[in-house]
Image 1 (cartoon, helix red, strand yellow):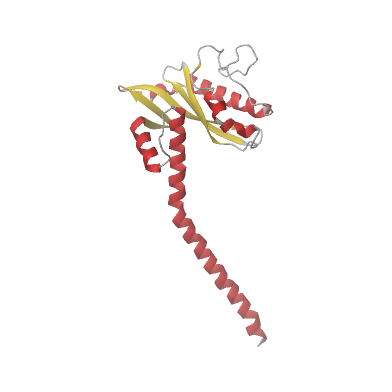
Image 2 (cartoon, one colour):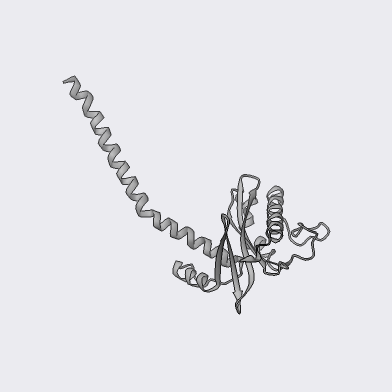
Length: 202
């Protein structure tokens, strides 16, 4: 009788564990494709933003259609570089950059013209900056001020300079000095590396 009292709760726990393990595996399998589709759609939306291509709706099918209509890509090493063409000629690239900001890793895409003369746009893919402070790098006013910047004016590797410094061309985020500096350094290094490594062979 004592053995029955001992084995019964153990058996119940085994059954409960098995049931919940099965449910978790099933949920993971069911949602895996949905999560992957959402992530792919969000990346496409961000690449389109970098190239300043308007997306009239947030429907995945519409985003995919516009993306496939305008954007091409090529794998270079471990990275995917996106580009757009006009009349069969490449006119712009979007490439990934990453680095360390104040509270952790930061990754983004930078768009530049094919002749490396103009910054087309930037978009952040991931960061851990504080909402309301460094997290304001996601705000439109901050990202839009990078669009159309002349990359030929600054000294080598110094494309982004915060005002009021001499040659300043963008505003930093008030109260988020370290995040602003990190963004500037990551963008400057990313552009310099892309240009000097000659990624135009796409």
